[in-house]
Length: 115
Image 1: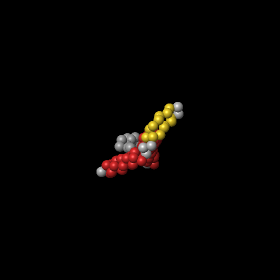
Image 2: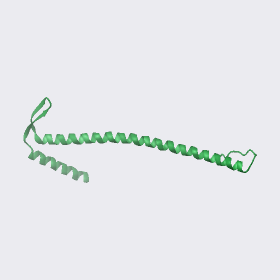
Image 3: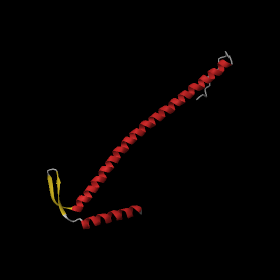
Image 4: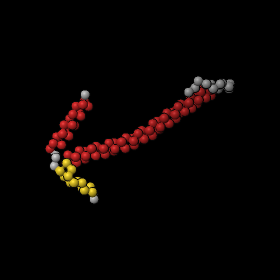
């Protein structure tokens, strides 16, 4: 419903522009000359060109942001993997520390359920 209302408002604006800007103008683009174009065509064309360029800039910005986020995600995964490895190493060192404190010369099996 909101889209329908938006389309009606945009259509009303286009109709208003078309009714009040019927003056014929000459469009010069560098060496090209296009005579007798209604002014509302130029207004609507420049509006659509501006919206298209804004959307293109938005897409380029979104792509760069996605690449940056992908890099950050990879760094987070790498850091989590390093944390797990360090936790395993700490656990092994704690087991060795306990074994040395108890002066146990017996060959105790390593904890198989360790992280």
